[in-house]
Image: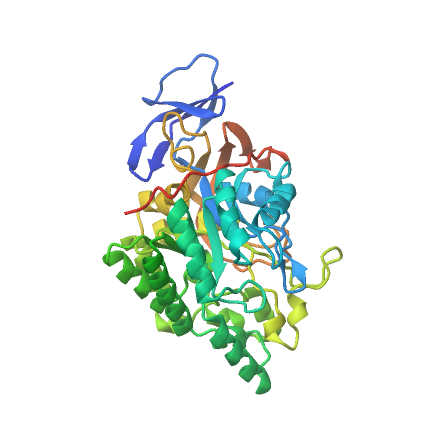
Length: 469
């Protein structure tokens, strides 16, 4: 079957052009002069719209167990919501639990995802128990196309690794070429501040943001960079939220180190103020926390995206319902009376592409090309999927989004497709919206109707980081 996308403006990281895009089967086979007739091809008219690569969200947590419950989106519901928002690939996190083998975690998450995803998917692996066997299994995981491993300087007693354990994993990554991903917050110091706040009776969600000081994100980022420099491995800082952490990444990159970072829409649009208003603030509890707008973190992050000190926008999608749910039970309300027990995470996978367009292009912070770069191309390069994903070029997968810059719509829990009962962006009117989505050449969204099905997605083994200096 052939599809011809006509009359649109094709936007890639490298530029823009008026061109028709020919899709045959699962691949892009030609970029043609506008108006070129192709016999037998089904035409999709993109007049007045942008034709862009499908987005890659390389930081999601479907079905993640956390804080006595688990993320409310399954791989089926979460990837369907992603497709509605113009994301055609996710990379989720398989979790190695304490006492479990690394590959046990990988196989458990493959079992959750295989046959259930609406779009293509891959995995990072969270290294939760560093020992001789798990270090060996990092090599085995590489053979399955897992080329990135996440570690935590936060959450003592859950995911936390010591500096020595982190360094050992980094040494292994230096040997096999993997990228180490780091949740960089000083969890030991944060736990002291949490205990002190609770002892003072400071139990509301606001104090989640107060105690997780931005300086502790900066300190941990500095420490992670120095350990990676010593080990000689690439380092990717996840969900960077703070000025201090950005300064550390910027300095490392200026020194020529293979240090990279992502930020998330919540840090670009939301702030510490959202954690106020009593327990309603639980809707906005995530880690690192939302930062004080007055301190300048938000504009620094936008600037970092413009200067390439930040390379990627992902979501850290990890939703939990606010009200008690008939199937999922108590989620955010597990933390009533104790902010430290609120499950950490926000819904966001559906809105990333549109939110970044709104803040970057419509509000004139970034170019169209840079929007595509941070949402699609660089994530694909960073995690070994380019040029199969992340661009519109001959031979690439036909993961294509037709985006209407003239569309204006309001974000709301009443209309979103994520499996959560609230929206962090309730009532926000955004400029620009997803119109049509193709995944590997298959039309999965058109005319405000979802046309895909469970199991359309395919597992993606990945190559090494293609973004190294």
